Structure formats: structure tokens, C-alpha cells
Image (cartoon, rainbow, N blue to C red; front, side, top):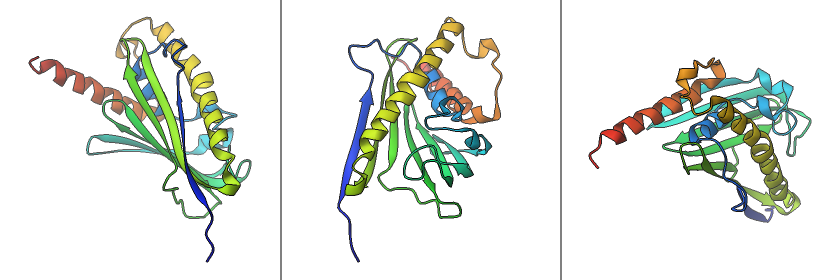
Length: 213
């Protein structure tokens, strides 16, 4: 049996301290991560992935959204442009941390998750309408895959800073400080996890407010 050299790479990203912090509240940011990949067509998503099915579950206070996409086109990585079975799962931990596991395998192959391959998102509220957003990923790569950490870091910056941020900031501007539920939003089936998390956060805030200070 032969073994290949393995290195562990951690790609860390954040808004630059020289830039303004994200101009939207933490609950909007978390809700965006718990929905589908429609916004990211051309980067980490494509039309074929719209056929995926989502399952939402809860265990020990953590909310997990599992998006399974069999028989779809891989948007990036070693199988880019090829037919594959892929998944993109998000697990929320109170109050504002998320871990993502994701992957793609040839059609019919077992969906084995890379032990070191995860993405992380941590949100720290700055004010009621702004948040500090930290994100990164980890993975184990052989010498022939040394190019991947740089590619993943660049892709993350594009997805979260150039695609997510403008949308979230536009939503916050249109909401103009009004309460989310007062606006009577249309709730889609893909919003199930985001709605559950929003309600859990509201419950935690109510409980905290009742605790004598």
C-alpha cells in the first residue's frame, strides 16, 4: 500500500478591518446561509442544483439543514462540470456559529465526507443593524492538490463578499429597521431552517431578558 503526503490547510477570511463591517444584522446573515444556493449560480451553484431536496432536523439545540442533490452538475473542484451526486449541509449552533459539510462524488458512489473538509461561519453583532462576519474552511490535501486552498479562499471571498453581502445589505436597506415578521414575508419551503433558527434566537432573547441582571 502506498501513502501520499497530506497537509492540513485552513483558509481563513474576514472583512478587512479597513472596510466597514457588514451593514446588516446577524439574523439576516444566518438566514442567508440556511437557504438554497440559487443566488450563487455560476460560482458554487448552477441550474441543475435547483432539483435538490432539503431536510431540516434538530438535535440538542442545533438546527441542521441537509441539501442533497443527486444527478447534478458539480460547480467546482475535481469533478467540476461533471455529473455527480453532491450535498451541502449547514448546522447552526446558538447563538451565531455555523459549520458546513459538503462534497461531491461520482453518481452512485457512497457520499463519504472528507474528515477535514468543513467550512465555518461565525457572526458577532456589532450593533442592531451591523455584524462582524468571520468565515473560513479546512481540508486535507495531497501534494497534487496544493492548488486547492488558494482556489477555495478566492471562491469564498467571491461568494460571501461579492454575492451575499450586496444582497443582504440591499435587504436591510429595504427593511428600513422594520421587524422581519411585521413585513409579512413570503416563506418558501427552502426557508424552513432559517425560520426555525430565527424563532429559536427570538426565544433565547426573551429568556435572557427575563434573567435578573
